[in-house]
Image 1 (cartoon, one colour):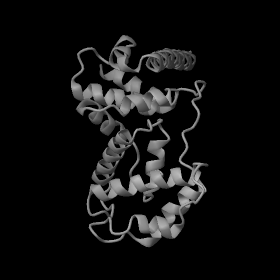
Image 2 (cartoon, rainbow, N blue to C red):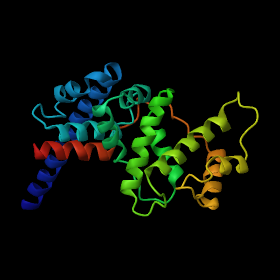
Image 3 (tube, rainbow, N blue to C red):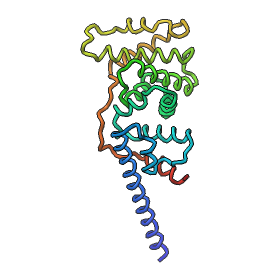
Image 4 (tube, rainbow, N blue to C red):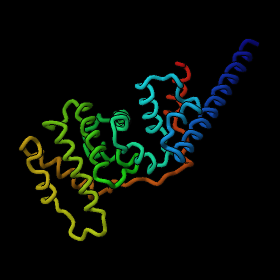
Length: 239
């Protein structure tokens, strides 16, 4: 009957979609394994697994790599941090594309920074941390219409103060922990010689004292998310 044929077609389409999802999951996880072993070869890895067209322009390449990094929590966070934290214009351009994929719509500055910092392991070198924070500050001020900072430098100094506060609070070798008053004093006058709102600084201090900015453990068994599937499937449809 027509109804039965329609039902069979629906089952066939569902089976085809499931097969596509399985195939893409295999491609994505293969690319993850290869990146974790040889991160410098990310472009050739994505090309060889069919996730990046060989003739893609520079903008598409940077965006695709950034999306791969953002959507695949199975990536080795140490390797990801080392790759994103490299010096040079190409690395900074990729770091900016990656940072732009985060949600800057909320009002909580420290939570946006927390989300970024828990997505990869930043190497301990001060120069690397500075590069990451500079990109974060610039992107935050560009994406957020009412950020309340005189300029991006203010966001950078505030972000750095949060990193230092996190270290002060949770490093066992630091015996005399920073107080609320000391933290507020440490960022006094940074907003073009004016102070940031006290309530904001107190909220930041208490947020960090309540919850450490901590890199989660790598879990290779994490499933490929629907967002990952939707992004790569759409790229194939556009190809």
